[in-house]
Image (cartoon, rainbow, N blue to C red):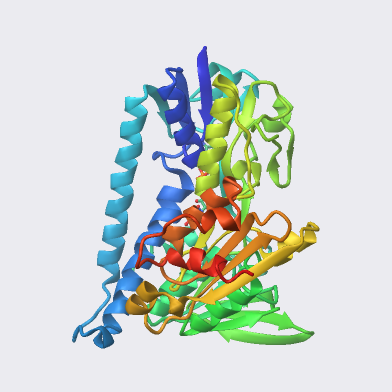
Length: 446
Ligand SMILES: Cc1cc2nc3c(=O)[nH]c(=O)nc-3n(C[C@H](O)[C@H](O)[C@H](O)COP(=O)(O)OP(=O)(O)OC[C@H]3O[C@@H](n4cnc5c(N)ncnc54)[C@H](O)[C@@H]3O)c2cc1C
């Protein structure tokens, strides 16, 4: 009998294994594929950010003259970029394998796990007993039921990360964060990109003013907003808007309309696990309806981000073996790693007001920041803060501009700690850094 059996070796699964192993618990981790790391490491966060960094370097090099750097033959070699991406993935996979060994985690690879009962997981033809079970089977790309979507030039993010030549043109169905990161990458390399989005604005969870500001800064990207894709015929994509039909041609079409939890064919229904379309239902301790069975990560449908998956896994392990922490979603930061990047944490003003909270807001353009101006002269950006008008506690920070991704954790810490404006004003930020934007924007409040 293991202390814990984990189904799925993505961020939720492998970090939970590590945490439980560190507590001296016996852990069995079952991963369906040959590699640990899940979507994030193998076909998500890490490969996209590795490629995006190359495209950012390329764009910087081409734009370096005003900084006094003359680069006459700037080029981009896709094969080398893919090679570097693969090396990064391999190195990080080894790191996870090392952590599993360090924490005495037993790993079964290449076998799909099946939940047989609240104490039993079937994998590799054998039944394994566990005092606790963690379901961490993650999620997959949703392929919308559009006629022609199975055409040879239609790809998902997984295939797009493996291409061996750049297309001349790319149409992206879906202007969510994944679609926009690819739009940023390919447009930076000179590919003509069209984003076709059903909503009236890209990345709907973002403060709308940041979305439109981001859109305007991505050069070489055309937007068809409020547009519903009707069909794909070869390289022609047809969409409708306000009753009118339009077509565009693209060498490659990316389907990027969302993700769904992996819950099918794993014995969940037969075992009596409470699952619906959004995923496995859990409470704030990541407990499911079956005693001893927990779920964490994308499979819960709660917050489809790797760092949220990590934290959910930690909360589950804590609920199993320690005092039991509670999962809080309010201060989970998000980042869109476009160039420029966008990051946010907590409520936008509209979200707070929907909840009946009276807010005060302030904003400052990034160009007032010395470090930002020095390093990103032509870029436009903004920092917005949202504060509870009554308690003066910080409720949200939303930033557009290079550097935001490395800073936003600070906002998460402040929101988690329920710091008020007067508390944050007493914190000293390093100068010159882009992080000062948060402090300076708060000083704009009355
Ligand atoms: C293109 C792209 C870019 C992304 N970029 C970011 C980013 O920058 N930042 C961010 O935070 N998030 C990003 N994400 C989302 C992130 O990848 C996920 O939120 C994260 O991987 C979720 O972790 P998880 O452990 O819940 O699930 P997964 O990573 O999906 O891992 C689940 C694992 O379970 C395995 N599995 C499934 N079924 C079984 C079974 N029956 N038995 C055994 N194993 C099974 C799978 O093979 C997989 O390895 C991105 C996603 C994509 C697609």
